[in-house]
Image (cartoon, rainbow, N blue to C red):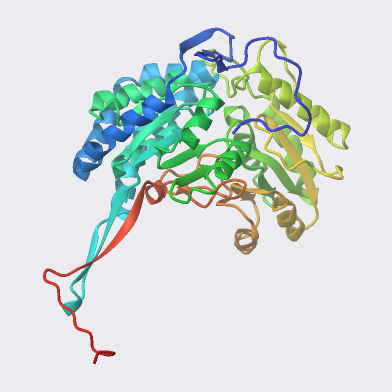
Length: 489
């Protein structure tokens, strides 16, 4: 889920981009300071796949109850490492400590949810059918699964693939984002300490080339990806002639919030600011566009700006705690700055300018820009703290504008009546549709996915069990019993 800009590449950043990769080495830097946090060798993908293929049969042969118990032990190992893991997440992504702590809690909570989801969605079932015997339904793992993780939630999002895949009996090769390898290393260490064999869960470090090698490798049976639409499309294209390989793509969004009649102006503004600027706007579900009823515009927009003006932007460990940290690196900050200027030069009007106080570091202020007057609004995922505002006159127009995107991940209606929400829900094109709730923070007990360029109809979250194992139907009778009744001499 990287920043996609409607303009050409920006100038070279002042510091090394986070996740610098050479032919043999990868280095991770702290966005907030530019200091090196982690350094390691680029992995040998062939060796990793061979090890996984050797380890998979024994892991798959473990009783389901054993694999589930090991995941519970893993949750306990994460609890023991929670301070170190949260600190590493904060340093490696730049997000505030309160948010890094919340991510660690999500990692722990995912275990029980995944166990429950597997039991519900992949349960064994038998149906007696008199002389026809028994019809049985069981599930089998796919084999060796590659998990490609993003930088913005480097623990929670890959964990949402890894845990269900391991429960189902798959071996997992986990490639963390090159911008957050240290976090991935801690997750794998916790899994190994819990008793998952080292070859059944491996971390492979490297850049985009390493990811491409894993996707194309004949020895893997599936790819579970969270990241940008561009990368997801490349994966889908690479495996288009391989229907034998399972592919789950959770990509980004150009997510709308429709703002309609409500007396709760302060609350509405808080929901919008949460949706647009949490994690410095670096969430796939972040609100990118608010579509405002004309009669509400002069009430809600100043309230949003007033609240955004109060947001503290700072380093992860600052006191008082910031609401927003930096974005991931200077290259991303340069791209977002160019994007904001592009919108301004093509008919948009700044409500709150995007400000970068230090050109050598990727700190950006939250920004708000009215794009109502633009002839063509770029349908891109601006992966950062840029919120577009669009004024409309009626709900049909609002829904039409909201649907004017190739993406379809999250959408929310703020205000309105139950009848208007029913219209909104029925006509909006998104995998997550909320009412008077933010677009971010979907329930872990629900499916997480979208339509269009936001995914390939294999949602993660509670439905991750569906792509981690395949159903096998069996007709079973203890003794052969058959007769041919027609067509014989």
